[in-house]
Structure formats: C-alpha cells, structure tokens
View 1 (cartoon, rainbow, N blue to C red):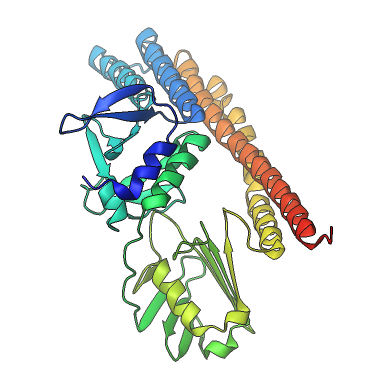
View 2: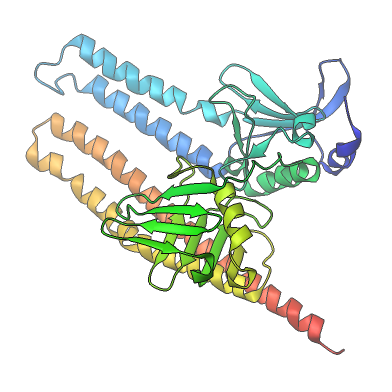
Length: 376
C-alpha cells in the first residue's frame, strides 16, 4: 500500500473510538460517522408518522366501506415497513481509516481507497462536499459529505483535498450548444470565432467583443465547473443555472463551457466568484450577499404561504368526509402539512444563518485589509 502522500492525513485525524484491521490483518485506526442531527431527527419524525398511519389503518377498519381485511393488512404492512425503513439511515454511513473512505451500502461497505483519490480516479461531485467514482456500480458512485455534521464534513473534505488529484480535463470542444430550459427556450451556440443566440423569433450572431460582462459562480474557487453563469450582452443577458440532477445543454459539461468562455472572453470583463471559501475581494463578498438576498426574495412568498395553505387543507377532510374517513385523511394531510412547514422553516433558518455568515466574513475581510494597510 502506498502511504507517503497521506501520512500527514492520518496524523491529523482526531482520536478514533476503536481499532480496526485492514485486509492484511494490520491494526489501524478508524472513525465512523453518522448523518447530521437534523437528518436523524427527520428520519425519526418520518418513522413516527408512518407508524401513526399504520395505527390509523389498523384501528379504522371501515376506512372505506368496501375495504376488506386484505386491504387493511396491506396498508398496515406498507406503513409499518416504511417506519422501519426510515430508521435505516440512523446507522453509521461513513468510515475513514488508513485504507481510505468506506461508504456504507444496504448490505456491505464499499472502499474508496486513498490511492484512487491520489491517482485522479475520483471526480468532482455535483455538490461542494461530494465526490464521484465512475468505477463504482450505478447508485454507489457518489459520496456526499454534506449529509454529515458540518464539522465532520469539512474535516473529511480537508483530508481528501490534501491528497486528491483532480482527473485530467476533457479535450476542449470546438463548438458547444446550450439549450436553455423552459420558459426561456433559447439556444446558444458557442464557437471559437463567436457565438449565436437563437430565440423563438430571432437569431443574433455575436463576436466575443460583444460580451460586456461574464460572471461565474462556482462552488469553490478551484473547481473548473460552475453552478451559475451570467453572460451580459448589449441587448440581452443569458443566465444559466446548473441543475445537479440533469444537464440542459449538449456538447460538454459546465467545465467545458467555462473553459471555452475563459479562453475567448477578455479577462477584464470576467467576474469569477466562488460560493464558499475565502473571498478573493470585497466585491466578491458583496456579490455573495446580493445573490443570496435575490434568491431568498424569489422563495419568500412560497415559504410564507405554503405551510399556511397546508394547515388549512387539514380541515377539509373533517368538513367534506364522514367518520372514520375524515379522521384518517386529516391525519395524513396533517403529516404532509407538518413536513411542508418543517421544510419552509429550515429554508428560512439556512438563509438567516448564511446571511449572518456572510456578514461575519465581510467584517473579518475588512479588518484584515485595514490591518495590512495600517502603518503601525
């Protein structure tokens, strides 16, 4: 086993709770990690809700007039199985030792060895704290550290980045076509000599000097891909939001689009910002705050009305249905309303925490700049 590149990684690990043995029988240290506390609470709430629904099916045999014993048994069994299944994520989900990072599956553990990280076989994931191994079977190709407690996720992330070698970049394509999703429906064709914007009613051909501003938002400053891109032209703007679950263009991924644009757009018109990590300038901090506030304004109305409408709908079965159907449906809609309320509350909490974090970062940045310019 190659040990030199990550010797410092092992010495920096915190105290581990127990000793494990590798495949060759050598003793080593390991630390196991569980899901973050809010996800464990969500799993417990979901399990309790499914168990409540199982009890409702069990105690209301006349939920439907034509319901038979077999249908009632199916409902009870389905929700009871769901209650048990939601408890599975409460187990240990990740383990780090001298061999590498172990990802827990349904029945066994899968090893992502340190050699794979150092050899460039592990790719960037769709999230800032996620990694992808294309050699793993489908469904097991991703490790997402964001599901762990923040301190644990950042610690493992820092360990990996000390030895991780990014995979080689894909060859740069001569032409890329971006299809913007509905309701925009424009197509942007990027080529070395310029680009073309095709809309429902018109087509505009532009040269690279027509670009007034190009702004990238990356998850981290050293990542080649982006999460958001805005291309400002004299008469229109093109904004691309990257959905981690799907790609809205052909010809290459966001890293390829970024590389092609960086090659041809004048550097003085490019703003290359990162969502996380140390800011490169005060302008980047202000842009982070503006972006966060803009995104929250887009969601504020939904997060205000969605839980209120959900709780109002819990009363509808009590008015429209008769016993015992009214009680059963009211219980189901109450659980749904509780879930929506929890999601909206969590969104607001995350926004306020992120905004406070940005304010602290800006203050620390300004103090640092003032300290560097202080003659004393």
